[in-house]
Length: 327
Image (cartoon, rainbow, N blue to C red; front, side, top):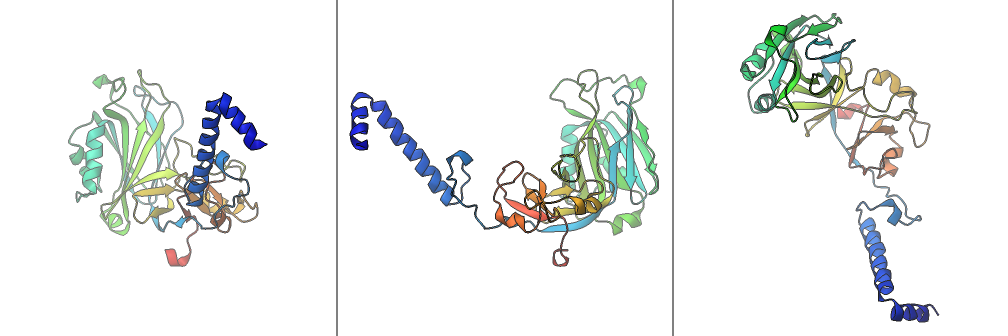
């Protein structure tokens, strides 16, 4: 009966026949792709399909100490009135504020550091930038100093904005370097470069930190990135405040890819009270990549191929608490 019905419809509507064949082809192709491990839309999956038990690849991490941190201070910020920043360092350091630094010059300097030109002092950065900035202000910061510093372009320079978008200059580049030569020999991380947006007359987006880079004594560069946790787990907001960085602490970084995952302030102490979003029992200890959601425990991560928060495909994961054989 079904065959007679379809044959009758075909006689009167060839488009119906074509549609049925096309639908069967799409469903079959989706099932084949899903069988071989390709990511397919959830709507095309069978409800009886079981998630693969093969765990995501383990990203090997190395724990290092970041002696630098910087956050935006209280109060309003603008190019005319300046901006308040609060550095926080484990050792005595130098804060260099470069206003109106050229984008191409800064990127060239960071690239040069990775190819043999060591950048570890205020003088190194000043010489490398070669006056491709409007104004430089320098502060000496002790290890116990937590006071805010006010940096501003002198009014006599008459600079009120940095031109229309896309811009050729960063409003403010803050560089933290270790002051003592002995500290530079003892620490793997020797400099921190923070790119800050400061609102002006032509672009009034609120002040925030855009990029953060850590430079090492071995000539490597790592970009700091925030981790994300569900707001329902322990009361922490889902993402890091764009104008805030963590206090100096141990930070985990990847062995090969130059990206460093930044732990939020109080992470080590507060993680114990945040439960896995799957089992709601064990503590969160796994960060999923590339979405960077910290939401599962060590046991549950092996049963998921997709992030339970955003449904992104999980390529790799790493542990917040490293075992002794991974140090």
